[in-house]
View 1 (cartoon, rainbow, N blue to C red):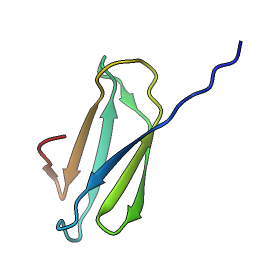
View 2 (tube, one colour):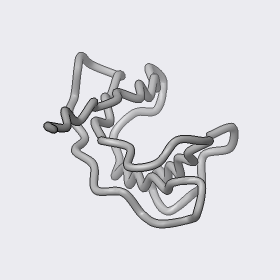
View 3 (cartoon, rainbow, N blue to C red):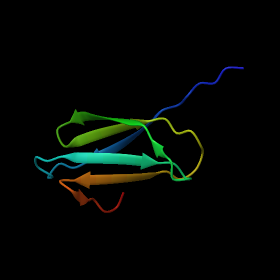
Amino acid sequence: MTSTAVYCVLKVIMPDAGEGVVEITLSDPVGHLLPNQVVTAEPGVLEVIYTPTVAGMHRANVVFNCETVPGM
């Protein structure tokens, strides 16, 4: 039996953020951090690519210039 991993993409849209450092962490429903890759899709749009390992609600934490971004 083979398993095929399915990856997910989270878009972070920030057209008016300006220059700065963005840090993104993702955690699964149990709280384990997930490896992810962040790529710039276009100016002001980041794509966070990750592969969930368990079903359920996952949480994203986005920090921009040392300030947590609410609503994630």
